[in-house]
Image 1: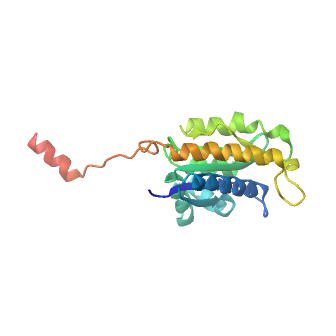
Image 2: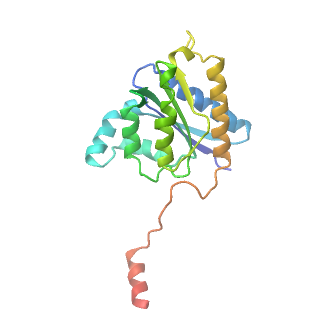
Length: 207
């Protein structure tokens, strides 16, 4: 049985980043759940901060550079995606949305997605439900029921999650692992069969 592919998209802008920290905690938990269930998993982290210029170039030229192309392919080929964005002005960041905009509109069809976000206060947590969940519903992804939000008060002085956040991470990780492990093989991006022009011409002549 081949290893499952997990893509982790994180849109944190600072270094160190609480958004990246939350993404790492979630990916570790999902990988642990899958391995406990007897499935191997390959994790690819897509750090959008490093791709900001490439994403902007792609938006104006329509063509991704090599690094952005590898990131796009990692997401498109994934059996599951963890998407984590900081919340700015009650929504996901512009960098996060710009990356989604350069993906093929069918790239995440049927793909299980765990949505998560970070912000300064808990009152921004509703952005997960009124911004991120509708975005992935539009992309026809299968969004895990539990979304994870971490405010500044959720992190301890040593950068570790408290009991409440740890419980949310564990529950969301279990849901995504379950969706990935039982994902129908027919779901995912629809691929078209390209018939060579010579065969099409021959079929017309024979018809």
